[in-house]
Image (cartoon, rainbow, N blue to C red; front, side, top):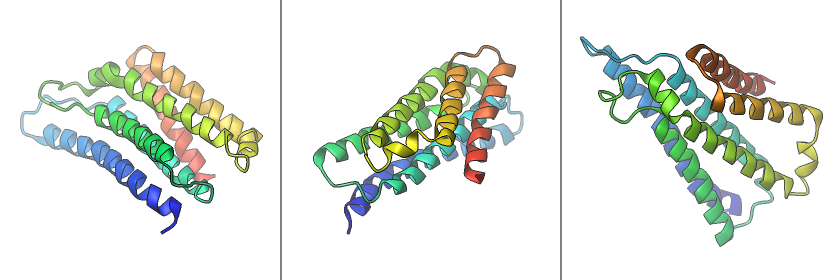
Length: 187
């Protein structure tokens, strides 16, 4: 077993649980909405936040593959990866309300949790960039125009999602965040 395989088994488990959190929240929301006489309003914002968290998580999972040859097992790295993946789990756990009957308007839930969820995601982005910048073989790729542009767009949209007011503008920004990842995946 390589160092990467050893480390990624822990990392993959925690990231997989994060994906399951978002998907489980969505499934519970749909199930609650389909109950006869349900007053649940799912809206667009919380599902878009869930899609953003999942796409961001997948992008990091993919990016982990890039560093597979430079990762070496150490206590420091295991702790860092655990904290990093735990932060993803925290963000994923907060996307959908735990008690759907207590929070029947998911757009209101979005406005209550978005700063924590997106703030965690923004912090993870900064950590990831700092880690990659510390690797001599990868650092030069960070300053390529396409990489800089895509990262700048992501950071600006995340910043906008943190502070934008109103349901319409929040929806536009969240759609743009999701679309940015879809475009990147298709490049």
